[in-house]
Length: 360
Image (tube, rainbow, N blue to C red; front, side):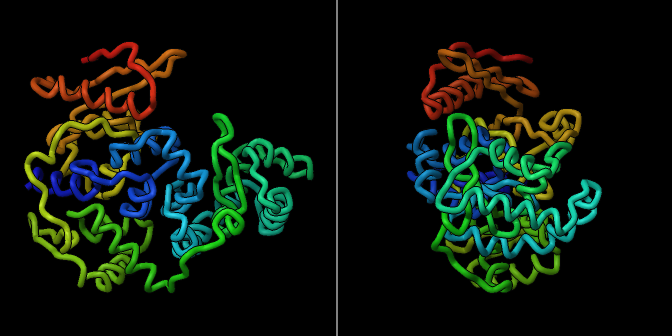
């Protein structure tokens, strides 16, 4: 049963057998792709659109086809440009309420946050793009301290007020832009319609999954998750596995055995973080190995036959990439395929592999 769930997830997440050829198609299908680590997140898109490379994804960002901002669960995600507004409106009220205590601890009262938002809007209006550090310096110059995580929370709050999002890269720095200017055209959905749309995207791109998985991923209550699922049911089908009801699209073909394959996933990938219960693809005893020290940092993962069997690390050098493979056990016949998957990653980055080693 675990293999069946894993194979469906690989296929529905477009990790296996993907024929998507544009970054925006991937983001639209998945609805939202976790992206607090920018270089990991672009590979999450590239992995699912085999003909694309890093430059293609950064072009899609610059062309305003995909948007990077804080959305679900208070975390950075890539989302489709036309969907960013309703996703924010769905997420913001609950998240802003949940962070009031933290804001108070940081000395960020409503008046201070409002002043920060005024400074940010004044600085960015007219189509300006600014690095985060420049924007925070402007706030400092107005006498508002941005250290001790205050600056991060100022920007976070402004994003959830629908004011800002991230723009294109400026060298190695992400720029910040005004959302209204950057995305003038967007869909407006009611709360109920937003729940339905999010449920449909979730179960289509991440099935087989449970309603508990959906609630966790979306950062909504289980009651709202059930409302969204109920309204999307006509497009879905369910199956009981080990006493739990799993859902997926009723329009997707079943995956074939050939779809399982060998893949190098980025850290924070939706294959893991798209679910509350990850036991179908990750053994309980090895789960701590992908989050060393339980510090919330998910390492890039090796997936063989749908199961997470190790981690990998890439180090950028002046002339290319060095890659180290860390399997949890023997890779056996899969080792050569792991090396080929590493070559695909290097091709996506447009850099040669200088050295590849296996560390057991």
